[in-house]
Image (cartoon, rainbow, N blue to C red):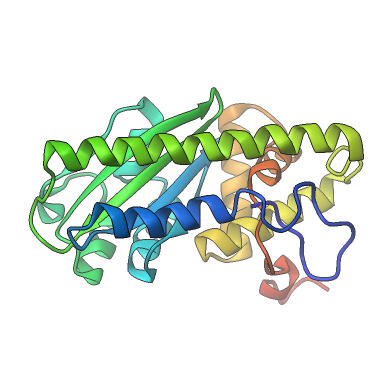
Length: 241
């Protein structure tokens, strides 16, 4: 989902489809095929930054956005250690207050987060939300794991393509630090539905924790995130011209 703010410069490598279509389409298909009235969202973690990549419903999207902004929730933990997080009762979950509160507002009572590794630095999680108590059969969990692996494969292929295209076109290599960071801010604003200040805080936090420059975090994100019509961060900041 690389970001290309309106009217600015060249189109990023990979065109408008990028990986943006994969998580969204797979979230929609997973909800249909897995059944049980499940609502599905896909979250991606790259360079220490978590972003929602695609959702079958707005309610599922809001729950994943709450996780990403708080950097706390079952899918965050699942991507961090590679183990699924089964939540039979959202009401009784501990340590994920913002996520649990959002789930309650949306009417979800149970969930599961199934992670999959893309690369050493990138992971995805398939998040299934249920309005019915604990529907998680072994067959359903096996199918969810298969879908998570499919999403990871799609993301991995897109990342490989982005690196190959950039080695030829030099899109990110030639981009200034300021432009790269602002485009990454716009991408995070779009995917996590947050303000420019929140997006910058996310990038700065990832930079400090990983001991790399904000530019490196931004470029890493831009290789994976292609967001159509990403907002201009300046539009969210009255103090900037």
